[in-house]
Image 1 (spheres, rainbow, N blue to C red):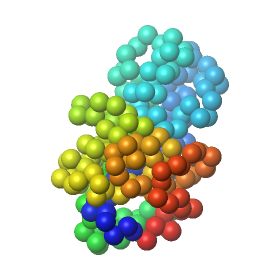
Image 2: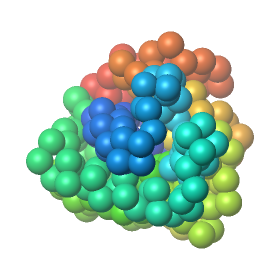
Image 3: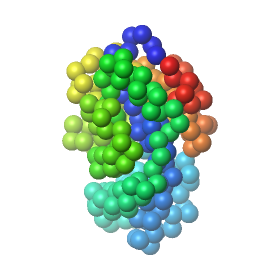
Image 4: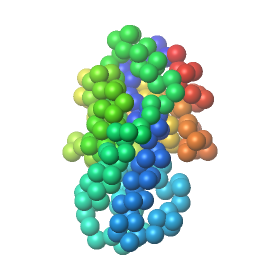
Length: 213
């Protein structure tokens, strides 16, 4: 771990938990319920977007009349049922969290998912006690989603830490750009959905969390 890191900010989906397939299934089910053809979406459309930005994109793509809040709520209702029985922690995640906790590094989640989805995922896999803060791009204090830095800056503010002293753990290029824009150091652990992303600006790109020592 970089010696200058005072606090650790974690992306959630695809970084700490293997939730991307569950998010996609919930999205497709919510779209199908509205008569939209989900095959019109490219796999790349799903990764890296915050909830608000993704559903604004879908509203435009499928001419959906409902407000974003209603779309997010329906999708989250589907997703939270899935995570209770299907969600898995990413390999090496627990060991990393234990190491940082033993080193007394304050930690927060900074995610593009909704507060409801974040809380459900963290609860389902029993990770809540590791984090002082759970920060969502949909929180009122966060104006813009990744790749803007707002969610990371808000997480640092809540922890009472200078952004320059934060280390971000991410899996996607939008998160890397957000961390760099926030003036933070960032380490990337890509997954099968993000291996082809552009990680320019990252300090390191690791094969798995097991390499993060």
